[in-house]
Length: 226
Image (cartoon, rainbow, N blue to C red; front, side):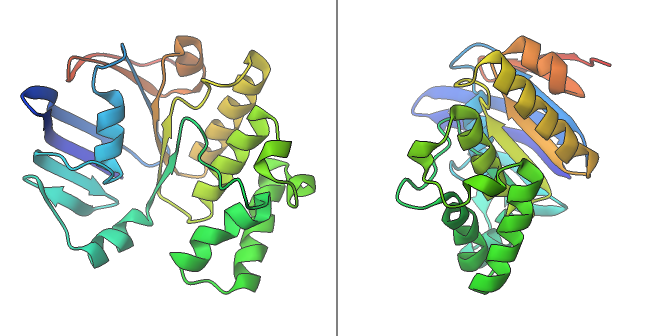
């Protein structure tokens, strides 16, 4: 589902990623932990083509977005990126849009859905997330946990095969962390592959199928929690 092969990245003279190799299977939840500055978020950004790697290959659902540091053309990239979703640490919701409007924006622009079809899809997702009553609310009217669910819903609206999370629990209290963990588990049961960056080891143990540690641009450990 997601294959990362010998991915390297430098910022100036600093080597941030030193030949990363990872495979994530359909339905698998991989969690990456480690100290700040170890390269975790840079790897996540490279996988989502928000940052260009210098070397290596990244494949999503069998299609390469880059090989030997060379990325595919914009049209192909746009097609492949439909298969991967990203939930940002600070949610990145559009503040001037309602919850429903946040969810229909990408399906209309990226998938080319009509407004009616995009709304139908968004309402289904809000039902799944337990947010039907918040459809007309704006982000400032939501709790942290609700914002996180909307951010997940917005990514789900593109029906990705792979979902990436950058510190999904950093702004949440323990009760809401459990809520997000349950949601992520339910998504993996439907076959979605997950790549999660976190500093929260308890959350990592709770939600993961596999944990890898990353420091100084290298994967240094791997543990499986049953």
